[in-house]
Amino acid sequence: MTDKKLSKMRVQFVERVNEDVIGQLVDDLRDKAVLNPQEAAGVKVSRNKYKQARELIDNVQTKGPKASKIFLQCLLDRDSFLAEELSVSTYLAGTSVCLQVPPIEEIHARSVSAGDVRPLESKNGISLCPRRVFEEIQAKEAAEIYAIGDPKTRTRLALIICNIDFAHCPRRNGAEVDLQQMTLLLEGLGYKVEPETNLTSKAMADCLKRFAAREEHKASDSTFLVLMSHGVRQGLCGVQSQGKDSDILPVDAIFSAFNNRNCPALFGKPKVVIIQACRGENEGVTYVSDREVPRNDSLIPEPSWSPEGYEQDAIRKVHVETDFICLYSSTPDNVSWRSREKGSVFIIELIKQIQEHAWNCNLEEVFRKVLKAFVANPLQMPSKDRTTLTKKFYLFPGH
Image 1: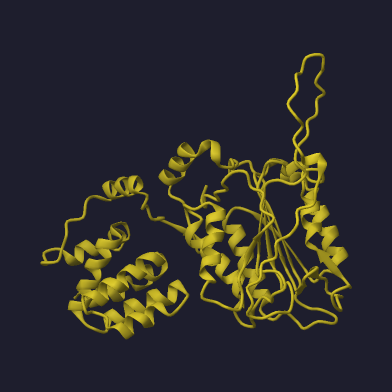
Image 2: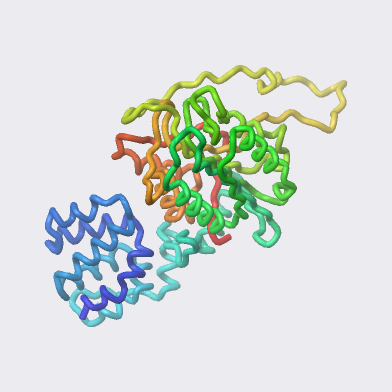
């Protein structure tokens, strides 16, 4: 019976189905009267992909074999690769709704050319990039992407600073979940994670400088810097902070420690900065300030001139700050929200989007998906800040 098949495949379906496919299935099943409008809306109301998938398959299963058969056929139509993995065609064989499914190799090849390959495996919840996708992107965008190092020789490091307990500010309940989940994410992406907790602003600054000086960066291809704390407009709060003017780490200190002058080992390599902190006290306001870019004459290109009569020195000018991408949990002057049990809503969404989309999307596109996910949330809007990537940065999970 097909409804029993749904029960057997439930766990794999919930784990592997794509969020876009869920939406398509809901629309298909509503059109075919398997779901009524209220049931369809009930599936879509959750912002969690796993909850949507569970709600969908459980709802269909309760409606019996005919509804389950329609569901399986819709899944076959919408995602033949996942359907093949779940042996859907076996259960539909011989029925009037069955379509012949080509061999898995043909599906894979056809999907690659159509840009619709699905990841075969996952690690720490991260969808891994199939080799063919990896090779195709490398071939098509070779000059436009940052090179990644050989997994056997690269020494990727990531730093997480997470302040939880404060002398004068409330405890950041739930922050320990953020720390745990970000550690799992970055380890799954191939980084050796170094966590630090409960630091003053001076200790944070010193920690950043020590980390920037690590020899391992020379053999690395990128780094992640994750900072989570209370925050104000001026920066991130140290554990002794009492307000806007005491024990505050300016965001400039992060970029200064890892710029091309102070961290030459990471020159030309992506430096990803993730900041989970309030930037003020306003609630429900989406405010983005236009910052003035200070004039720096050393960054202005020199005029064209003839090299005749001159000799080269073995140095060259480079921009002080390049190859950064920063995502802040909120816009200027606004608060960031955190659950005591589940952690920060920004960190939860960031991890979800990286897990689901880093296998075939560059990081800027993943960050765009994070911002899009907050459109319906009037209380908080993450923002990209001070991004100076000159190429596309693909994480290529699994490579």
